[in-house]
Image (cartoon, rainbow, N blue to C red):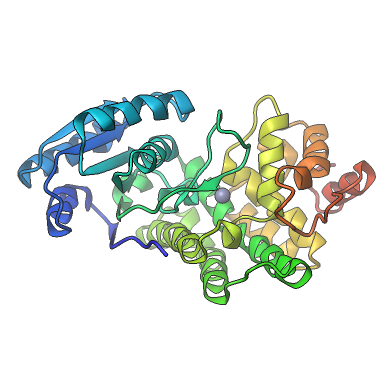
Length: 345
Ligand SMILES: [Zn+2]
């Protein structure tokens, strides 16, 4: 079980990155992995704080979350041999930092500037160009420093997407339990409860999140971090990723212009909750209140792609048993599901 040793969530916590690292015993050098826009918003503050703490650092700017970028950062790591890699930015920068540091056996610190999915704190990575379309487990950040004043200023769409990824645990845990009963798969109650609690807390605080109030943003960030911890405890993404995620992965492969991961997972949760006989109306109502998509139209994806993704979701990851079963949904069943839940007209 790998858990973060320090988690800071709050306003203006970024200047304490350097101090946190020295407290954790790091002596530098550090490699800051960030993007060309986010360096102005947060990267420079991180670099300053490293300097003040007496830690040498270098910076590498990444353009996209691709395996080429991971290789480029990895060779930089092998060259300068940092004792810590710091990912500063949205999902892309964090994912590249996480995977390249894991491949080179270096520890990693996460400084998220957006809260669009649970990858900010999890040991899980997903990106194009890997040998599989879904995410897989790497290593957990040694610490997470999440500045809510910066996250609150990110586009609201990212915050709503983060809510979709958290609400998804409502069905992910049901799928995990099902796989335990039917396939005798390992199931951990504590990790499952932690993931479920995150979804409950986001549902309960939907209005605060919609207002982008301080407590609302903190709640979402803490929920995303707890999801990451749930995966670390379970040693698998199971507590956080079920059929609703398989649907999202399938949609990302099929649709020419997919929506955001969390947005698609949210819509997937509505439909999978229906299949589980759970309260899908609650999920839809909460996502609607948050301002996250609940329909194909709001995802800006053709209804035909949604239906196709539903029929293909089970084949994304055949070893992951879910409510979709081993053979998946027929086109007719998929159409009915999407229309009964109001996802398509
Ligand atoms: Zn997710």
